[in-house]
Amino acid sequence: MEEFSLYVLDITMNSVRAGADKIEIKLEEQGDTLTFTVTDNGCGMSPETVKKLSDPFFTTRKTRSVGLGVPFLKMLAEQTEGSLTIESKEEATHPDDHGTKLTAVFGYHHIDFIPLGNMIDTVMTLIQGYPDIDFTYDHITPRGTVHLSCEELRAVLGEDISLASYEVLEWIRGYLTEGYEEIDQK
Ligand SMILES: Nc1ncnc2c1ncn2[C@@H]1O[C@H](COP(=O)(O)OP(=O)(O)OP(=O)(O)O)[C@@H](O)[C@H]1O
Ligand SMILES: [Mg+2]
Image 1 (cartoon, rainbow, N blue to C red):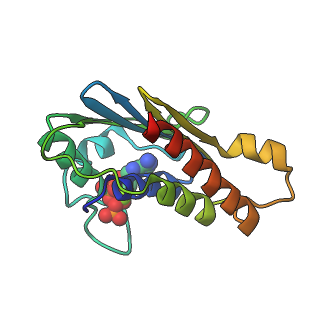
Image 2: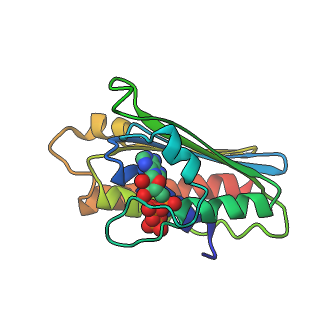
């Protein structure tokens, strides 16, 4: 994959498939590093599964026998002198506080890092596809922060309006575009 935003989409889809209804996506630029975290309240994984995750041939998918999402991201992190870690609590053993947190650190200015790509498209794709999930998106930079919370939006719009409706999606696109214009201009 050539753009980082596609990795973000791919990794967040793991949380969607894990049945999460709250998913926090965070990108934080700090000095030479970019830290990417996805935190979800999905079904979680056993410690054995977490261990196997760095193996590119491990997947619990039934439709395809090879899972590549996490190993690819790990490779990109390590190529740029960063790292990838996963903390997870499985539903079976932690019925009240299960979920997964993936943290990937990248050398943001490393020659092997790839273009960020279109984060707005990634966020829009997720909200459009899964309007009932509470996504939180934060892109924190030294120039300012782009922040979107589906829960906050829903509180304003009321329960009857879907976040996937055309007007709401267009509003979200405008809001994120403005947010990015603001931090890109500084
Ligand atoms: N957030 C998560 N919550 C629960 N299980 C997860 C999570 N992320 C990954 N997993 C487990 O790890 C496995 C491997 O994930 P990975 O993204 O590497 O491959 P995949 O999703 O199976 O396939 P691909 O990403 O190539 O479509 C998944 O099949 C799933 O069982
Ligand atoms: Mg995956």
